[in-house]
Length: 365
Ligand code: COI
Image 1 (tube, rainbow, N blue to C red):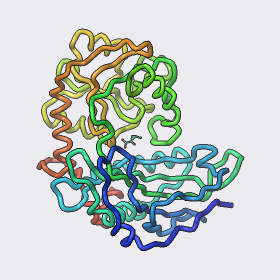
Image 2 (tube, protein in one colour; image 1 turned 135 degrees about the vertical axis):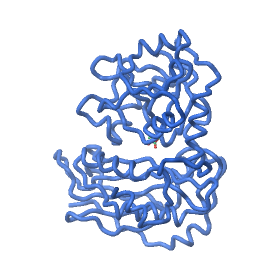
Image 3 (cartoon, protein in one colour; image 1 turned 30 degrees about the vertical axis):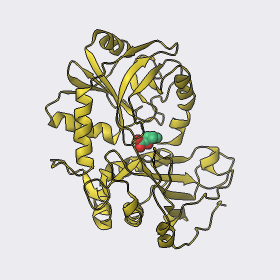
Image 4 (cartoon, rainbow, N blue to C red; image 1 turned 90 degrees about the vertical axis):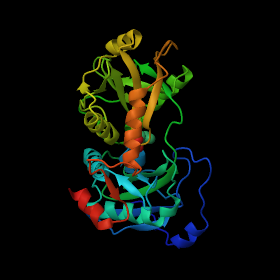
């Protein structure tokens, strides 16, 4: 019934003894030579283990291949200014992974399994977690439906993988974005608020269009009216307007980003006014033209905060933002200072990756 794969046994220590970090890292280019794998069958998760990173055998008729029964997360372990890798709000990623799995009728890994996977992988790979500011060990928990069936039904067997990539930030310089006025990323009742592969597959044509028009990626509008700003393809969207931080409210069609939520809380703690609201694209463009909108940025786990230098249309017309972005810079510094362990702060956002039991307790909270 399932398309399973014997997990290879290997001497993980010997594998890591021969490993070294490449330079430059880039984002998601280099893959750690180890991963964690656990399989689900007969209604239960097996214990799982660290295995060498390698392609896995998947039946070409598996539900993850045929129907996109797949979800994932993006998290990071940071090593800067700390001896050991620390995680940032891992319970938020775990909760979202659970919601994504449930939305596609998949069983989520238990807190014990998820915590063990993160803790064991970060522990084994500890000395290779890159340490410059903005770098991290990017973690990609992934859940795949394995049963082969051409009938549209949920799998009964699954594979949970934790992949890792020692990485730089997603973008090394300010980006430009194209307002996508034809296609939509998500509609009410769909999967836009979950982290499922199909959301990203559906964005790729618009990304190509935006690149062909001289931009980096599309800015998505709502599916119903094509007038309301939602988010970018893999990042949330924020604007500084009249000195306040504005972002689209969580309408049910955009991803509830952990970085988005953290920045709203951080900004408020720094005395900055924050506004979550329906943001009309027409109003935003007027505000950019008049100068009322002084800064735009993308935010997400991978992106951290990426300033947006210009916003434009498929015909190539664009509006430039001022080169100076003091609010963006201040927020980015404050966030990284917390994530990389340099700042005292009032939030309990960071957690030692190696303390498996404490991590599991957090995931249960
Ligand atoms: C993240 O920010 O971690 C993401 O998953 C976005 C993208 C790289 C897929």
